[in-house]
Length: 215
Image (cartoon, rainbow, N blue to C red; front, side):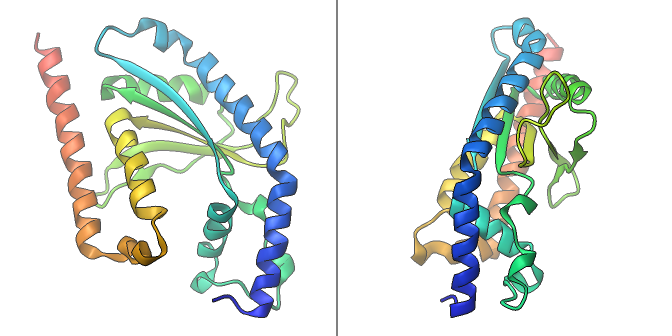
C-alpha cells in the first residue's frame, strides 16, 4: 500500500495524465496516420500471403504511472522529491505498431519509416539470446511544417506479426492480470516459456521464408 506521501505523488501524476490525455490522443492519431501513409508502397506491393497491419494504442493512466515507477531506483517514488516525477518523462504515451509478415518485409518497412523518422531514437527489443526481436523508436511527432503535434513523446515499433500477436495476448494475460496473479511476471518458469515461444515463432518464420524462397 502506498504511504501518505506516495499517494500525494500518485494523485498529482493522475491529474497530470488526464490533463495531457487529449494531446496524447492527438499524437497517437497523427503518428498512426503517418505510419499508414509512409508504408503504403509496401502495403500495395504485398502478395496474397504477406501482411502489414498498423495498430495504435494510448497508454492508460495506471500503466503510465507503473512504467514511471519502475524507471526509478528501487521501483519507488521519493516523497521528498515529488517535483522530479512527470508523465512527460515517458517515451511511449502514444504508440503505434506495424505488424509485418513474413520477416523478409521487416527491413523494407523499417528502412522506409526511418526515412521519415530519422531523428527518432532507436531502442531495439532484444531477447535473452541477444537477438533483435523488433525495431523500436521514440521521439516527438511533427507536422509537415516541422511544428510539434504535441508535447508528449511517442513510440513506434516494427514487429514480426506472429510475435506482435503473441505480445498482445501476453500483455493482457501477464502484465495486466488480476491482483492475485501479479507475481506471474516474476516466475522463472513463465519467463522460460516466453523465451521458448520467441524462439519457436522465429523458427516458424525462418522455415516459412526458406520454403517460399525455394519455390
